[in-house]
Amino acid sequence: MIPLPTRRFVLLSAIPLAASALLLPYFLVTNSTLPAVPVILITNLVLAAIFTMDAFTIPRRKKMQAIRTADAVILQNSRSKIKLSIKYNARPGRKVLARIFDDVLPGFDCDAFPLETRLSAGRNEFAYTVSVPMRGPYRLSHVHLTLFGTLGLARKVIKVPCETQLRVYPDLRSVSKLMLLSRSSRLSFMGIRRIRMTGGDTEFERLREYTRDDEFRRIDWKATARHRRFLVRQYQQSRNQTVIFLVDCGRMMTAESGGKTILDHALSSVLLLARVALDQGDRVGILAFSSRVLRFVAPVSGAARHSALVQACFDLFPTHDETNFDLAFRHLQTAGRKRSLVCLITNVIDDANASMIRSHLEVLSGRHLPFAVLMKMREIVEMKEKDDPAVAQAINDFVTWRKGVIHRLSAGGVLVLESFPDQLETSLINQYLWIKAKNLL
Image (tube, rainbow, N blue to C red; front, side, top):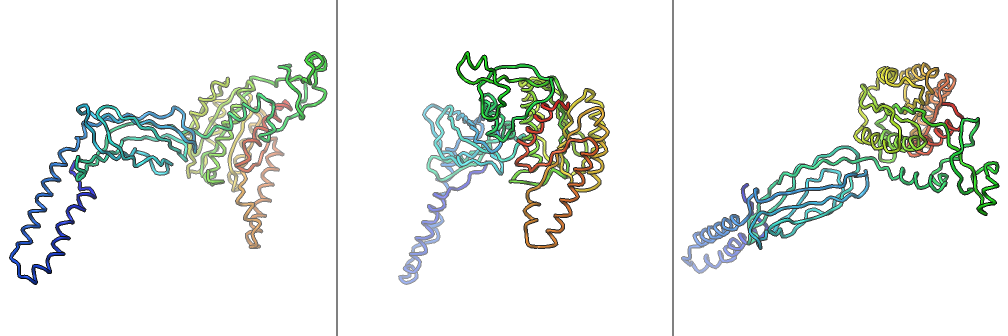
């Protein structure tokens, strides 16, 4: 690696030139015979020699090693810790001035670099936090080091190999919040409604404290008298049922809402509902598709298997391909033979796709319980409020067309939910709990 001059060397080299410029008028007036040019040349040669000697004090690249360790779970838009260990193979007591810059990618929020420090012989430990705005896999390949000579006149920029794979997952803090509120029977704080159950397909699960949302007929008066506080009987709903999510990853899911694509909103909602369904004892599977089947996870059971669903979804991104619904539903027919709640999440914007979705879901209605989740764009609603009559009329026509699509789906025996992306989590859970309570599956 060729040594480069530092700012200190450039300033030092400018001193002879500045002195010559200042003394030149004196030489011209006095007709002095002092050889100014040779003096400047000799001075620069001396500086070049000093620069070369300083460059030899810079450690070679093979004397540097780097190890990077990151958190096992990195959540999207959340601060995560990364540790950097740089080993300087030199005699004890040796130090070198270095400027460190890790191989963080564009878009990473990291304010620790460049980090200027003195590397001692042996291991040098550093730590910083980073926030990644997009989920998915990332590869960090090198650590960039700028090493300075002893006098600070020369520097070398080297890349130390350091391979690290980062897997950034969707922000699932809402799952933890849901589990916490579920244990304390306060799901209403997340907008999740308590659904009144019908029919006899339930069995007693446990006693818990009374809350305002409970029905009086659920109060266990004997237990209440015994414990001297209101207790209600909680029943568990039907278990061992199957929920399969069909997630459209095609061009209709590339639109953005609130700084995220609607596919991001859809996947976060699917993973949250998947945890709810697994806790209910149901089996959950995911089929993601665009022009081809991108990912398929056969229905799994048990809350511990939620991580398998997260692993399958964290690197899914919307494509600009036309969605192939025929291929997705053919795959479903061969993989999902048991009666299931088939939840299709998509965004309908034209008649061709609306007709295709309707035909496939209506065919499923005899064998499965079809459930269509249609994304609704808030930006379209906001455009309707503008003063332009032509825009308002176009929006009205689109809204009327969408209502017709929903009506035809409902008439064909398909459950339909229309929701804004930022409200999809609670809307989807409420609809699932309603389906369970009504024993529709």
